Image (cartoon, rainbow, N blue to C red):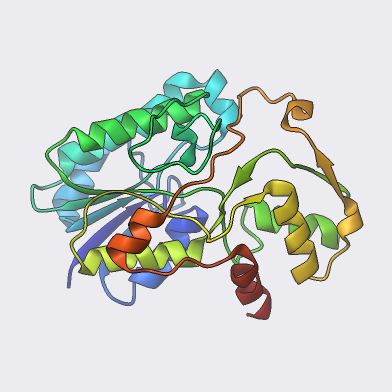
Length: 283
């Protein structure tokens, strides 16, 4: 049985990956912290010990410092986790192992949208800069790798912290929410991303791939769609501009990704946000 090491398994992607892959592989899934086991990917000695004992065939790196605003004020921590952490993983991996690394749409400036894998990368915040540096580090290594860039992850677990859970739980509690109408993406249902990653463990494909929904939608319209499918009050949702939030870090406005490459190369289907949300609601 092949061995898979998953970093950042406490997040919505890492946790679902752990559950799905446990059925088929020998999985070591370590969150960034827990009572018994934890993984600090910035600690090389810890990493080396784990790799020496487990000897993974695949490493799926979901670990990241993802608080975009905090990255601006904690640049050293952000770079240690997002760049140095990946560097440590690469140093510990055997030559026969494969790295699956989760990148971000924030490597782009968001001026045009519909970004292809080889389009110019011009991140406008420090989080995006660290993710781009990590991508370049991996592409410049001699490793067997796969980089997947998704955007706006959400899952069926409404107890986790993501956009869908925030909208649903807020509206259920009759709380008004302000949602930006000028940030546009193609949101990713985590379950579908997990299946793409799973297939990459059976079929040898490498390089960089974008993954998202079939449709392109603003955060505000996505929130309205959620309210309709989950039968919640849409009148509690107020459209606002990104500039009114006065956030520390700039956000790319049009960060939606062109996913033609993954569709054509891997022969997979993309699904609309409405279809994905209906699957969650019906389940």
